[in-house]
Structure formats: structure tokens, C-alpha cells
Image 1 (cartoon, rainbow, N blue to C red):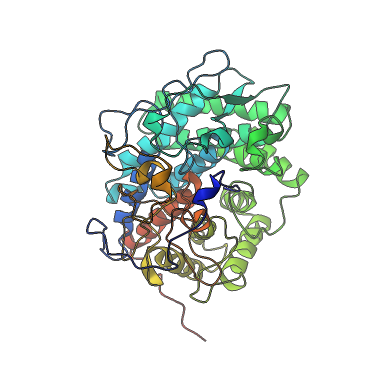
Image 2: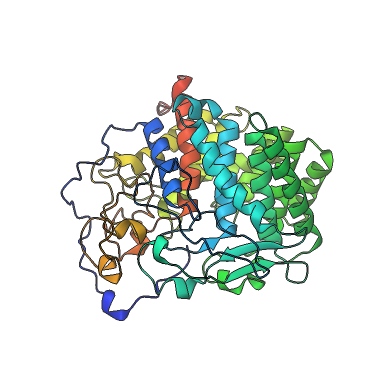
Length: 476
């Protein structure tokens, strides 16, 4: 998230140690690089982020019903969905991108989820989003894209169950369009419709109908969503909407087989000049994902070459830390890496695109770094010396009825609740990490940080199941 903290000045002075090694929490899981286990934990993180009325099978004992008064300007029910990060705003743009990536990994590697016993859980995680998006799409050309005001939200540190307030809501419509937000939500619903097609055809069709309407809305009424939802510009700015239009059209083609969507995707790809080699893949730059999907769908050299250029650059030329971690940006260091690993794992499934073994070995090395390969784990509750102080309000609170507030934010002690599976932002360009709640640049957790990471774990587990060699290529 590109922000930052609105905090009382008295709390800014950090007392945390750099690369501190606190007493190991006995509850942390230390079973080596068990992709299936981390996959399970990552889905627990999403469960901890749920907003709204929780189901009876809720597995997070320290979470309960919250934000039950989220309503649109005409009283529409906007409860549900996920809290974005360690705070309690619901940002539709990044929630949708997260959902698309989770669905993509499920579509490509369902056997991995099945082998890990997580196929039902990933479907539940996706449906928690899609149910919310369907609620937010209140009419053909109206979509709510944010619940909660960031500056107001960040004056509160505590449990979401104790918010107990009516929150502002923000939407896009024909007069105030947001092609990027509507397009990404269309992509999420289209990709999710594929996930549900074999298990709930009626719900799959419902997702698909909303996806079609949202894509049409995005395509006909052009604009950037942060111009309609001004609060989002500072935190999740979108600099273009051409990639979202192409992205949505591709997923609609994959879901429907209707060639009009394929033709639209090619048109958007050319019209918005999406041919360049990107250096990252994240919520504001989806070109690498578009290129690999077009390479998969068409088999054409133009798209294969584009994907090969992206993965070859990432594997061979992109900046690295001294310990070998790909380094793109300090905001979400590990998330950027996991997203690239995921895209190149997808590419590796198509031998004609590039060096499959090299791409898979790269993905394994990068994900293994996150799981402890460089000396510490960056996944909360997993591996040796895992993060103890994620920047996350709810998990920093002690058990009820003990009060929770800003004193928990500034306390130099492990979070009382373990936020299992959360991937923190991670180290800097020299592998330095500060396990400190106040140091959000290192300990931030967000929905999208875990998205490509989760799908990359599924891809690596799939390779294990098929005994595919991911060892380094021998030097010539």
C-alpha cells in the first residue's frame, strides 16, 4: 500500500531491534518448506481478514462479526468482503486483483489445492470476495469501490469488532466512471466463475453475468476510478485502465469462449500499447499477466516472446539483494517477487515460451527465501524466527475482555494473536528486516501481498506432485 500512517507523534519513536531474534514462539510451525502447509496457513490469513457476519465454521478464534452497518448511500447492504491490511478499510480495487490471482492459481493447479486438502477452503476464500462484489454491483452501471475513510480509520487502533460505527462508502457510476476498478472486478468475477463452474453452476453463472455487465460498464464509460473515489488515489492509485480492460476481456473469453471478448482483448492490447516489457506485475500493472494469458490462448510468437522477455529479465537481469532476493520496490518487497514467480511458473507450463526449468528454479528459490531460506521466515507463524510483530491492529490485541488501543501499537512485544500465513512486506535491498509493528515498510500485511504468493505455492506444490525437476540447470 502506498501510504502512510496517520499516527500520534508520541508513538513514532521505534524501540524495536533490527533483525532482532526474539524468543521463538512455541506455536510457530517449523516443518521446513512444506508448500501444502504454508498454502493452508495463507488461506487462514484471508479468513482473519474477513469483514461482516462470520459463519459458524470460522476458524479464527479471536475474530468475530464486524462492520455490520456498512451500507451504501441508498441503504444497500455492503457488509462482507475483506479488510485490506492491518486496518479496516475495504478497497475494492486491490480486493478484486487479489481475487483474480487466487482464482487463476485455482484454475491452473486445482490438483495442488486438492492434495493439500484446501480446495474447499480456496473456494470459500474466493466466494467471500465474490459475494461482496455482487453486493457492491448494485445496478448495471454502479459499483461501490470503497468502504471506510482511510484517515478516519487510522485514528483507531484496536479490534474491528469494536468499530461500531456507520462508515462512508464510495462508488463509481456512468457520470463518475472507473474503468480500472470495474474492469478488475469483472476479471475477478469471470475468473471465479471458472472456479465454481464444476461445483455450483448457478453461482458460477451469477458471477459471470455480473462480470459481463461490469466489463461493459468499464468499456463504455471510460475513466480512472481514483478520480471518482478520491481517497484511493493516495493509497492505491491506478495510472491507466487499458490493462484492466484487456485483462477483463481475456478472463471473460476464458470463461465464456465468446470470441468477441478475445477480439476486444487483442484490440485493447494494441490500442493501449501493452507490448512493452514490464518490470513488475501488481495491482497497477497487469501487462505481464495479460501477455502470458495471450501466449497461452493463442500460441503466437508475439505474446510468447513478450512473456519470455519478462521472465528472462526477471530471472537474469533484475536487481537482487546480496542473498539473492529479487528486488523491485520496498513497498511490498516480497509480494512483488511472489507475483513474478507466479507469472513465470504459469509461463513454465508452456515449453515453447521459454526456459521452463530455469523459471521454475527461480520461483522455487524466491519462495523458499520467504519461507526461511535466507535465515528467517517472512510468513507469520511459520518457520524459524518468523515475524512476531506484523503491522496488524486486530492481532496486536490481547484476548477479550482486556482493552485494546494505541498502547498495543507501540508495545515492543509479539502480537498476542498469531496472524498465521500472513506474508509481511519484507526486507530491504540489502536483506535488512525490522520485525517491528511500527515499521510498516517491513511488517505491513495486505490482501494482495498474499495473493501471488498463495498461487505460487500452489504452482510449486503441483510440481512436487508431478515430480518435476526444479533443481538448478548445470553450468555449461
